[in-house]
Amino acid sequence: MAAVKDELTLISRPAAINGQFAAFGIMVAFFLVAPFVIYPVFLMKVLCFALFACAFNLLVGYVGLLSFGHAAFLGMAAYICGYVAKTWGWPPLGAILAGTAVSTLLGLIFGVLAIRRQGIYFAMITLALAQMVYFFCIEVKFTGGEDGIQAIPRGRIFGLIDLSHMMVVYFFVLVVFLAGFLLIYRTIHSPFGQVLKAIRENEPRALSLGYKVDHYKLIAFVLSAGLSGLAGATKAIVFQLASLTDVHWGTSGEVVLMTLLGGLGTVFGPVVGAFLIVAMQNYLADLGSWVLVVQGVIFVVCVLAFRRGLIGELGRLLKRPL
Amino acid sequence: MFHLLGVPPQALFGQLLIGLINGSFYALLSLGLAVIFGLLNIINFAHGALYMMGAFCAWFLLTQFGINYWWALLISPVVIGAVGVVLERSMLRWLYKLDHLYGLLLTFGLALIIQGLFQNKYGSAGQPYNIPASLVGGFNLGFMFLPIYRGWVVIVSLVLCFGTWFIIERTKLGSYLRAATENPSLVQAFGINVPRMITLTYGFGVALAALAGVMAAPIYQVSPLMGADLIIVVFAVVVIGGMGSIMGSIVTGFALGVIEGLTKVFYPEASNTVIFVIMVIVLLIKPAGLFGRAG
Image (cartoon, rainbow over all chains, first blue to last red; front, side, top):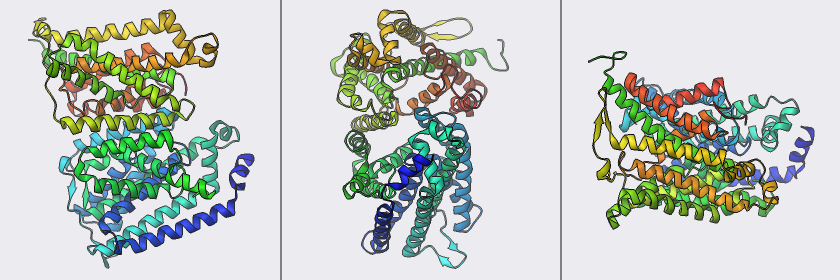
């Protein structure tokens, strides 16, 4: 491990950290100014999906585990959050925490099963498990079937701050996003994160050095699932809707696409990817199934010619990992 | 009239037959996935989309050119197989030296493109495709009614599956293929054109999927979405069986189809999820899959 760790940390660590601080500053500044220029509802969708993509990237970019079932965490958290907020009348923070908790638990179940196999099988198992969750959501009553859960109340935080105002809810989502983002950032740059990267680079070696690889993978998986749940639950409160779309495999594919386009294993890539894909969906919404075709083409181009993604390429130009 | 476990025999055997038919498609598709994965190290996410293209090709031949089912059974696999060859030569071959996951991502993108294009042209509704005249009707077997076409699908699938097994396990060509799966560079050193073999293998796997599509056309409606959900079930089948053995893929495919059919009789609510539940149980008990090698 010593050698692996040195290799990873000695690559111009101060430069890397400075570059990332600058990029973080730009990102925060952008999201502070943006709602006064761009439609806030669009930005809130971007923020929710950016958190989702960052959580997904923690797994694929830093542990090398490609999950094709992350929609299950996003969608299930949205349903739980929507249900407890609407039917039980929970306040928004409690509902979001409930959704996040259920997704974390679901992540534990998925993780225990999926890490029993590696590589390509891992992707297929997570996809199949998520499909099972999808069928579950169709069958059970509380999800409202095809209609989903509509008109979820936004409520008040601590009974004081009213979330029905557009700007208030925007800054609430921004705070949730930044909290999730910083937690992921901290995880990546911690000793725990270094072990994750060692597993990504050479799993047998990490194992032979005495690391309990399966434990590390499971913790990363649960963390990623929980944060995806946080994104899903927040999304349910913001858009007052939880529907089958969020649990469908198409959403699992979209988060892969966002991360791939922005750059696998980059800190800021998923945010940029989420912004671009959500923007594309908004502007191409009239074109119907052409969106699928465009997404497919982006996948193909990224895999064939552009595997570092936008931020990965930018980082290479600046000689700084972003 | 007698009852088995409280279920009328017509319902039981009827669902068993539907299970066998679904199992035929699971077996044909998972077989193709296993053959492709063996040599290319790529999980072909586009397999469901190519199966759908096979069905559409048959429908197109019939409605545009009046070419019947029997010719479609021949033409569609050749045409879609050729599409597969083009995809392999133009895109997939650049990925062999990379992580397996990129193959999955690329073929996922291809599946989205194909599905999107067809959805755009034909919407999500199904197009009807009639059973060929010579296979209309059925036999009364006493305990159940057997439609000829359904019996035909099961028999053809069995022949195709065991034919593939025979080619790969018992012929000279198959021995090259198995050798190239183990060690491609050594096989190439013996003067065998491995890249061409890889291309043709992909084409063959795709042709099998297209053939399954043609056979499925009269049973299910021909729709752009017919492959998308099927491929996820087939992935679960592959996880259960493991991709190490050809015979394993065939047996697992048929067995899971039958189990799914039986579930429809005894506990219909679970029929969509039973295969995934079995996958979970297999992962807990035998993580490498029933016929798989570790990995």
